[in-house]
Length: 164
Image: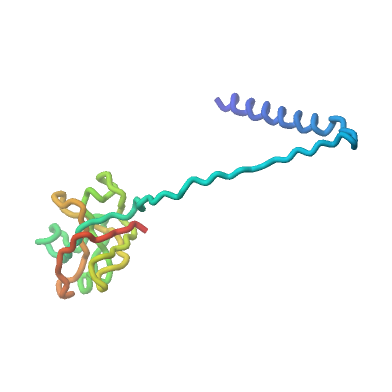
């Protein structure tokens, strides 16, 4: 296969060289019979369509604490193996995504991806890193990691997330 490609490349190189040589050896037209050919380039631009950004999704959002009742038997280790700071879990700005959003199960978001969250509150909106996944019963949802003493609770619908 490689030999055929090499042979084809050599043939095309030879043809290009032969055309270049033949254009140099052609007789020059007489000065009286000079022809001017005008080339026009026409650019056609298609109208810009309003296509939604494929990385922006509308989801529901909730809060979770690193405790066995809300996670699993190892609440301070995320699904990707990251360790949660026991004294201040909220400082990480990590989230868990439902499995339908995660690339392992056919979604578009992977562990370590940065995600911009908006539509919750000034305190919770911002950039987060995906470090965990949610229980398989959850769909189209994110869970924001906070500490038990952070005094944040809630469930929000129509939250926008955008993969950065």
